[in-house]
Amino acid sequence: MERNQDSKFEETFLPVTSIGSGVGIAVLPDIYCYTDKIVNLVLVGNPNELDDFVLIDTGMPKSADEIKEMVEERFGEGALPKAIVLTHGHFDHVGSVAELLEEWEIPVYAHELEIPYLTGKLDYPPGDPNVDRGLVAKMSPMFPNHGIDISAHVQMLPADGTVPNMPNWKWVHTPGHTPGHISLFREQDRALIVGDAFVTVKQESLYKVMTQTQEISGPPKYYTTDWDAAFESVKKLEALKPQVAVTGHGLPMSGEELAENLNYLVEHFAEIGRPDSGKYVN
Image 1 (tube, helix red, strand yellow):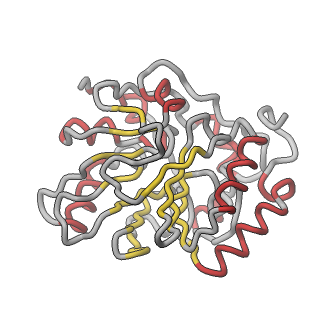
Image 2: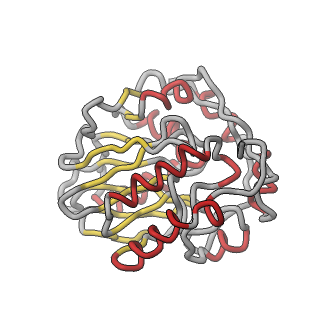
Image 3: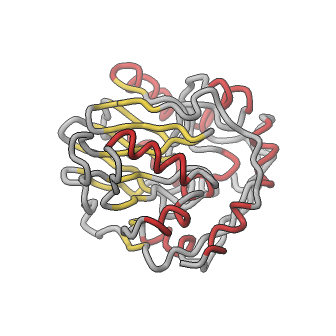
């Protein structure tokens, strides 16, 4: 793999972090949520099984060493994921994937519609600063929007909804934030790994991002380009009646709190989920 694949990421300084950065939460015995600055990545697997786990998303640029250290703290020295699964390809979810793959010779799985952004063929639309008055939204045009090229490793997720190396899990197509965005669901305990289909922090607000103030919200507004699809995806996930949800941004949510908030988001999506205006709104 060539080093310049993520060079644009490496040249980008993003002065955004949160009080939760560097903190891991054991959401369930085999689900571990770790916050890298402002974004969550997830380890799925029992910590006493050294090489039987999967990494969901790869955080921010320049975080590869931190991620490897976190993995070894959770699973032991020399631990290696069986695979990486990407919910989507935005910079804060794939920021360290190319650097990790220089050492980890493992497959990466993503939805078919996300593959062009992961093989250097397409770039994402730039962030829209006009969707919200929050400072993160205003900074969003400065965020990287280019695709990356990990062609040697990336594969399409199976069409039957199964997830390689993740028995009992199914992937759910939840477009809107990106065309090939996915979430992951396990029926037996109704565990949901959301990605950015909805989040539990107002991601457009710098203050709320930094303090990790918990608040149900739709997908990050500045990067979402298909709002009708985004609403359908939220309804699809609410219909699964998850018992615990790990989102791409914000603290995990569970139980009655999750059920009430997710139902509220569905019923009030036009007011709290979808921006009033913006270049991707209509």
